Structure formats: structure tokens, C-alpha cells
Image 1 (cartoon, rainbow, N blue to C red):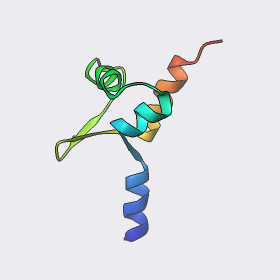
Image 2: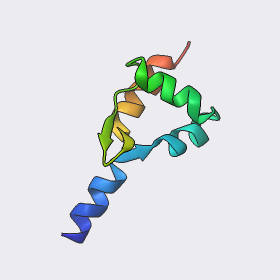
Image 3: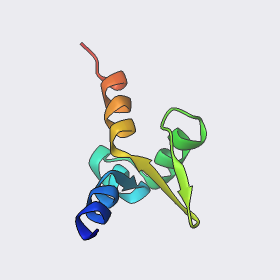
Image 4: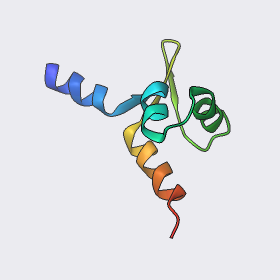
Amino acid sequence: MDNQRKNIKSDFMGVMDISVILGLSKSVVYRLIHSGELPSYKVGGTIKVKADDFQTYMERCRQG
């Protein structure tokens, strides 16, 4: 059960995690979420993004 919880936990990222990775402010990340560019879930008042959805977003942003 603990391994399952760890896997589920690692499948999601917080706004702060994303802002650090991208080097953007939290407000910019919130804008990406509210515009629908970055799908999210609201869990207990906290916004979370699936790691797979973040990866897909990054691939869409890739240039070249």
C-alpha cells in the first residue's frame, strides 16, 4: 500500500514544482492552468498536475 501511495504521489506535481522546473513565477503557471493549456486537478484546495500532462505540455512547447 505504501508503494502505491508513493507512486500516486510522484505521478502529480504542484504549482511550485512546475514553476521551479520552468523558471516561471507561480502566477504564470496558474495562468497556464486556468487557460487550459496545462490540465490540472483540484485536490483539497491544492492544484495538482499529472506528470504525464506536464510532459505532454513540454513536448507541445518544444521548438525545432
